[in-house]
Structures are given as structure tokens and as C-alpha cells.
Image (cartoon, rainbow, N blue to C red):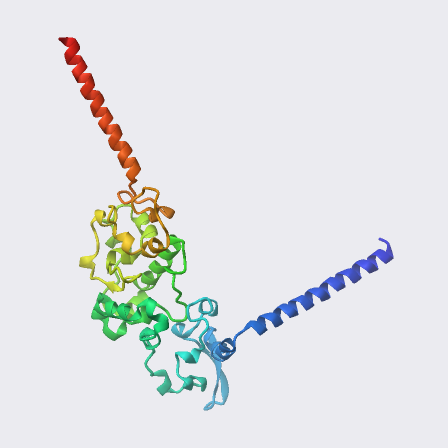
Length: 324
């Protein structure tokens, strides 16, 4: 290889290496500059709460101790900064006293804030109707059977929760996200036993009466059958006892499908229909037998049926006439 060419090649590689380092540093500087003050403040908490282990100084034994973080106190930063509360700082919901480390026993025993503490009575959040949701939840089997052990945070983990029904146009994503909220307890023995002493039911065997069970689980939310619907609310929170769960096929598989006032309620309000189908908005994600009939096909089918009857009648008359 020509020596001059080799030298030029090495210089070129070094230049690329240096430039890539500069670009990387600039990218890091840009990322750091885009962090909000709240994010910088939260780092003080997340230095411990974003990890499986944390260190502290044992003043009695005069040594540093590595301690395991309780799972319920560990924050997934990726999920938090994608959640509805991503712009908050920790002390917006937690006492300022938590800035002192180690946290005192008194601070740890403080009552947790509830959704309505921030969202209630605020015109900015009026469209979400938090007061009505709270009233509905108070009537639900979750609230009446489990009292203070069951609250908003039991289902809507404040460090990761994000609204799906209003923010996603893909129905299957909404279904999967909302059903995972239910399954996070009903399919998790550890969390289930924190709420009740009852034996955790087997979800599959409890629904063995349901035809095409897997398809139903993929295409409807638990609350479609297990919650009392109220047209004024986008998502029902009045969870009913299992004895009152919907079990009649025609509740969904009919022109007056209950799905239109629950799962497809938001899409119905945001999309115009007009292709002749009953409950046309459903067709973006699935075809529901009995709920997606087409008025034009119905008329064509009726016309064909009447023509067949007319043909039979004419044929019968002609046979009688010619026989005579």
C-alpha cells in the first residue's frame, strides 16, 4: 500500500472519530438543555427510586449499606416520562419533607393524595368529569367490598398511567392497555392478595362459557361486560358484582350494541358515518356479527327474496293455467 495513501486514510479515520465525538457531545448537551427544571429536581429522588438497590450511611455501625428497593417504591423512569404526570415533580404529590434523606417514619405514614385532590373542582379538568367518576367508583364492587384498601392508584399507577381511550385511535391498543390494568391484579397473585383474602379466580375457567373466548379477550375490554354504563362518561368505573356481568350475546351482537356506548363511544363522537352500515365505526377494527348489518344489503336481500317469491308465484300460476 502506498505510504501517503495509508497516512491519509489514518488521518481521515481520526477526523471521523473526533467529529463523531463532537456530535455525540453536542447531542448530550442538547439533551441536557431540554430537560426541565422538574426533571432535574426529580433526579434527586430517582437516584434511589429508579434502581433496584440504594446506598445509605449507617451512622450506628458507621459504614455504608447497600439495601434493596421495595418493588412498589421503584419507579420506571421510561414509563414515568411517557405518563400523564410526566411534567410533574415528585413533590407535587409527595410532601416536601421527602427531600430529607433518610425519610422520617412520620413522612412515610402520610396519606397518599388522590386524583380528586388535584383534579376536583378545577375548570381546566371539567371535561374529564372526575367528580362523576369518583361517584361512580364509590358505587362499584371494588369500593364497597374493599373500602380504603382500593383507591384510584390501585388501577391507575400514578407513575406510569396514561390515558388510552382519548389518545389512541387504534382500538386494539386501547383494549390491550385497559385490560392489562384489570389483569395486573386479577392475574397477579401478589397484588390480588394485598386487596382480598379470597382465592384468586382462574380467569380462563371462569369464562369457559364464552364462545370464541380468545377472540373476545382480544377484541373487547373487561369493563364492557363487568361495568355499569353511563352515557355521559367515556369510561365506566362502576364495576359490578360478577352476578351482574353481561352474558347475553345480543347485548353486543345487535343493532343496539352496548359497545357503542362504551368501547366505541369516543370514536363515534369523532368520526362521521354514512356507508349504510349499522355501527359503522366498529368496522375499522373488526366485524361484529349482528351489529354491523348494512341497510342497503338488507334491502337488496329483501328485493331478491321478493323476486324469488314472485317467480315461484308466476311459475305456479303458469303451471296451473297450462295444465288446464
